[in-house]
Image 1 (cartoon, helix red, strand yellow):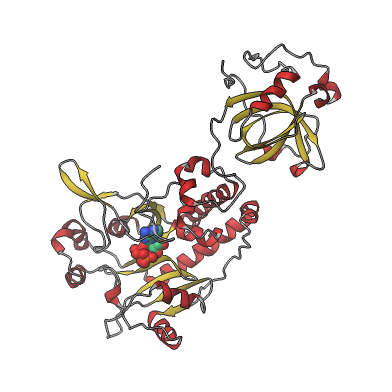
Image 2 (image 1 turned 90 degrees about the horizontal axis):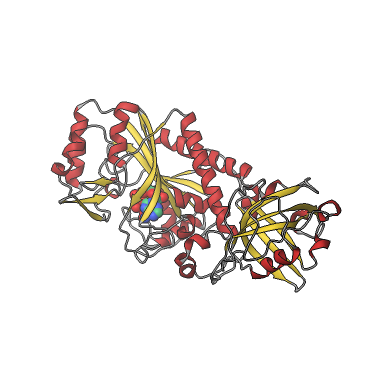
Length: 468
Ligand code: ATP
Ligand code: MG
């Protein structure tokens, strides 16, 4: 004997967010049970759907459940084991109540009932049910409530699909959706076209960074750590391109800001330099935040985020300037050293919000980065976009002359022969170009206040986790 019903011809008539001002109307709602309060003769079930939640009130004495007009409807003889498939049928109050009694949190249900204003109910509305289908009865209870925020990460990630039902995480991913939407709208408006480049590649695009090897038929290949070389090549035909896609990095470190698989927003633009793309990047960041602030009020409230649309231009600091600043603060750092976590924390104590660090030593940047023509050749036309102590983007003017590129490859210990298919493009009039890569998850951390990058991605991948 199954307690579960088929969907049959039932379909949702409304979302929980659409019930205001519908007093007395009959609706069909679908969703899952997010909480149950059982007071013996009365059971309050919270139904959550993708738009929100609404309370369903099951009373043992079902007749008193129903508004006058409705209670005159003849009850059908349906029972727990044999439900009438007719959508018009009204289950006996007894069977309806018994069904409510067997419900467990997370079960999927469909409820037909009447909307009733009720001051004390969440959002001032409750549903007086006439019929319910249990579409899928939960068999186990997850080790966490969907309402709580502080639960050990590993316990949650093991059943991530259920974890993602939690309200604050749904808020994060609803915001993520709008971040992507706003990025695309912004870049589209600026005349960029969206491209896709291969994720299975034969050589490293940047050298250095750890690659994941894969089997490619009978050869070794790698997962792309960045679309860098392809997006540069595509400026030849399209001038302004962007890609939103995974990057793969075999990061052995366990930090709150590194994933083995992340989503990168990559932009490349012909006939401009790094200052022009910094202008695009800050414009994009500000636009996205303005959009989210406008469209995701409820989600931002849930995350207790008082988002402020940053004004542009963002402050710019030269790398050398920050090294001096750190030294004045007593930090030990030599010109040419990368900023350590401690350095970044110290900087974030002084520099707040979004800011650029520009003109990095050429030796610290990838081979394709253009060196500054200031005579010293020690600096590069490059930048990082920071938010407090978090790097969210790196970019630069790229080298567009083949001989210069080959020289820089060699200088960084890379073999030009491994880049034959890339270098050949530079024989065909490669335009000057510049671009950046922005980490989507890190950007989302700055918007949502989420401190662990794993909670800004659906199924995080890191050195310890390859499932689910
Ligand atoms: P970091 O120094 O923080 O490891 P990076 O300088 O190696 O980052 P880039 O190669 O500059 O990273 O990549 C551009 C952007 O892509 C970064 O600013 C960041 O936002 C994002 N990104 C890079 N690696 C990762 C990663 N492992 N996990 C999540 N995001 C990443
Ligand atoms: Mg970087």
